[in-house]
Image (cartoon, rainbow, N blue to C red; front, side, top):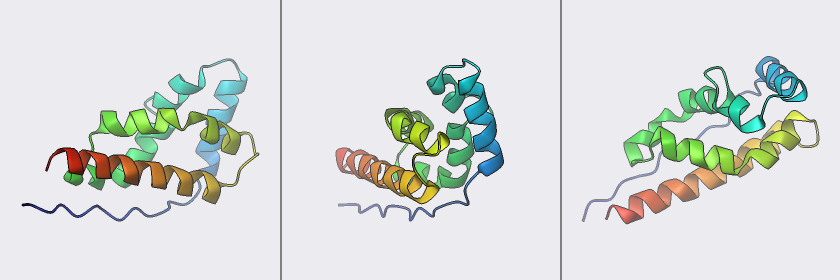
Length: 107
């Protein structure tokens, strides 16, 4: 039996300048999901920090699915209703659970 250790995720510094741009795009009428997925969006920004998840078997597409599923909480953070630590720690939990599912499915 092979045991795959899960990567330890860190909480990156809050992307305040990018968050302002993401919020502005949504307020200007862009779809939140598309803003999150865009080349300069939240998904690629966070994946660039947590891409070690791929070593445990979580693909970028899997990661994107988790983030998009968490978009309501991300929206609340962008809108100022949640603080970054709340938003990010909740997402870290979801990503960790999803990674555990991927690892367990492969054993």
